[in-house]
View 1: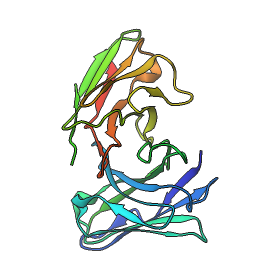
View 2 (view 1 turned 90 degrees about the vertical axis):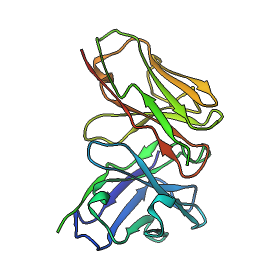
View 3 (view 1 turned 180 degrees about the vertical axis):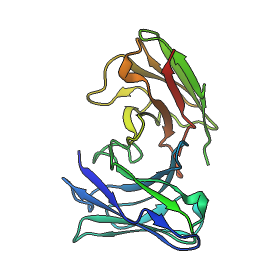
Amino acid sequence: QVQLQESGPGLVKPSETLSLTCTVSGGSISSYYWSWIRQPPGKGLEWIGYIDYSGSANHNPSLKSRVTISRDTSMNQISLKLTSVTAADTAIYYCASPTVGNTVGDFDSWGQGTLVTVTS
Amino acid sequence: DIQMTQSPSSLSAYVGDRVTITCRASQSISSLLNWYQQKPGKAPNLLIHAAFRLQSGVPSRFSGSGYGTDFTLTISSLQPEDFATYFCQQSYDYPLTFGGGTKVDIK
């Protein structure tokens, strides 16, 4: 299994942009699929989107056009940007992936998560 | 979107009890259903994929069943380390969606 490590600011102001990075070790982001998932404190899980081995991205329509998922293959990193944040975007943000060859949505590798709080 | 409904939302049980959690999908998802265990402050851990396939390293007291819209996670004999929250998730279609969770605590 690969190792995933999220990083980024823990506080973001309302209406600003949330930016997070997931650093992948033990595997290449040029293989398979890499997702972002979030969890408001004490609540359930929401899939945000993925970027695949070719650099193509897909995101949850519930987040409309606020989400951008990109990658830096030289750094082996995945990035998430979420614009125009509100308090509803306060959550623990995880990056996650399946083992290569498994069903794309079977997340057997997770980062430890990073809490992002939207507050003025 | 495919809605995933778990029941119950919480339950209390004794060590050694047999515990069953159900998950219902709003449409058929074939066998593309996963179960995760999450402990406080930790990321979810994949227990079962494709409805009944036990993830490597997961104890055999965990089992899954179901097809189509109705699925079950069973813990045959609850152990102290099993007290946690359990989530189902469909991997049939995008957006991927999760159930609301079932919190299992000590009676």
